[in-house]
Image 1 (cartoon, one colour):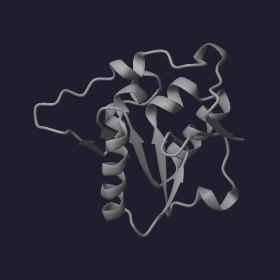
Image 2 (cartoon, helix red, strand yellow):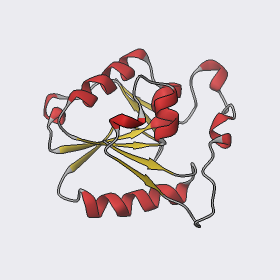
Image 3 (cartoon, one colour):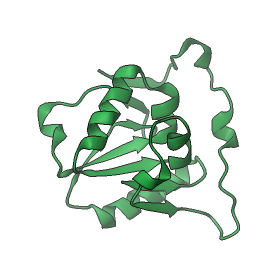
Length: 142
């Protein structure tokens, strides 16, 4: 499992894409949770998606803060697979799940400068529509 630490921002997603293209270019990427295009929170996979040849992309903030129990169960299933898992925001992921930093094989930090401090203060702020559990821009896959 690979953790990617960095400030929650669009530029980091572009850096992630470039890094992942080099590292796992021959594999199929499955977004389990993401805000890359629109918010995605999956709660099931189809049979061929359980392949160890796939790379599972997980947004640690989206999964642990907005994921349903079905989504969290899917994460547990994925974690048992002998496949590559990439978790954005591993700090938030381990704070709100049963996983620890010891579960990660690698942690990659992406910074704009060597002295940039990685914080998640912006991620702590309530989002529009959070009180209802639904955002007008959510894309949920059952």
